[in-house]
Amino acid sequence: MSKVKNPKLAKNGKIAYEWARSHMQILDNTLNRLKKSKPLKGVTIGFCLHITKETSVLVMGAKELGANVAVCGGNPLTTQDNIAAFLASQGIHIYAWNNQTTKEYDWCIEQVLKHKPNLICDDGADMNVKVHFDKKYKTLNVLGSTEETTAGVTRVKAIEKQGKLRYPVIIVNDADTKHMFDNRYGTGQSTIDGYLRAMGLLFTSKKIVVVGYGWVGRGVAERARGMGGNVIVTEIDPVKALEAHMDGFQVMPMSQAAKIGQIFITCTGMTSVIRKEHLLTMNDGAVVGNVGHFDVEIDTEFLLNKSKSVKEVRPSLDECKLRNGKKIYLIGKGRLANLVAAEGHPPEVMAQSFSNQILSLLYIYKNHKKIGPKSMVVPKEIDRQIAVDALKAMNVHIDRLTKEQIKYAESW
Ligand SMILES: NC(=O)c1ccc[n+]([C@@H]2O[C@H](COP(=O)([O-])OP(=O)(O)OC[C@H]3O[C@@H](n4cnc5c(N)ncnc54)[C@H](O)[C@@H]3O)[C@@H](O)[C@H]2O)c1
Image (cartoon, rainbow, N blue to C red; front, side, top):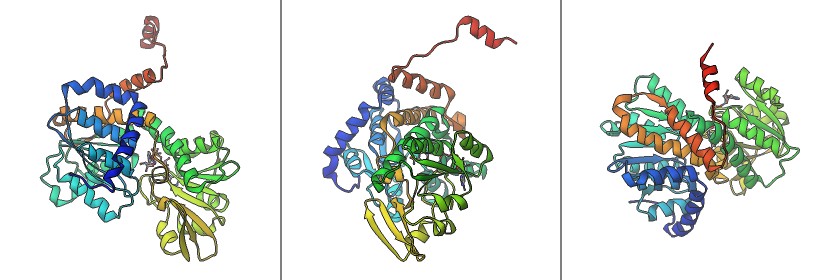
């Protein structure tokens, strides 16, 4: 069973899937190694992820390992309809299309839960929050879950802190081979891609304000500087602010940056970092967008509902004419600009993230009783093995400690 926008796009989706898979060697190798033994036979997995070509490789991989799979998008605006059509054509239960209302988005999550998943693979925790707090799912027998992103981690930890977590959750985001590469290099590149597609403007010489200097912010700031931008960083954490300063970026509060920036990129996972008071002081023509997980970082209510006029001037770019006469441009209605206006992360980086996902799903399936209802990091041996596989895939060789060095390291 599935509901997608246009099943005729399946052929095109298949080409995109094959292109991604051919650039996701680590994941492909892992799947090929495991698929004979069908380790997920009899297991139903509910996926709530951005439906991109890379995600289709993960989903098809889970099916190859024997799982019964049901899928919905991880955001109302990020589904690639050709990929959804391709997955539906492969007999995957998928409920996803681009440009959903929040009600439709919610409906799709519910359809996946009707398949009674034993395992959940979540991105942002929308599915896990539903399972925990909607009475309908009180008796659903979920054995465990994985969580893909920083914003979802915050929510899972909050549920755990209240003593309400029902099953183990492996925090894939916290694996070194995930956040150090996906959040930094994946978002770094795809954010520039999204902004360029949305604006079609020159980056070089522009004053670019990167809000938040965590894993995502670092990657975005570095890439924006690489494009010739004059990058300004805003932060609330003194250590991160110091790091940005030492990395050679200007650091200042948003109240100051708002007045001089030309392009704004929010990367915090925090709510209300660009507020009405900032928007009112921005330069005429400033472009604002967000790559944090939820659309809460910019006051989009003020821009989209309180402006004198709003008009779409390019795909994924709204011109908001404020009552003070200034025009502010908003990318992708304040939702993940790298996925709404572009295609999300490149496959090479997602191969690492999704190898973490598939190996963590297997780990949690085997060990859920032992772990109990708590969150945990990806086991070190999985994380390390992915680094070894990634180096191999990139044909990079490294040294090993000699016996003498091991002895030296163990002595005082
Ligand atoms: N777009 C994508 O494809 C993508 C990929 C990975 C992660 N994410 C999302 O991006 C967000 C950031 O992820 P991360 O891994 O960098 O998290 P992180 O915790 O490493 O970094 C967030 C940073 O924002 C800073 N911050 C918080 N409030 C702030 C404020 N008011 N002003 C300025 N800075 C503030 C924090 O101090 C921190 O340094 C999360 O929502 C995450 O889910 C998106």
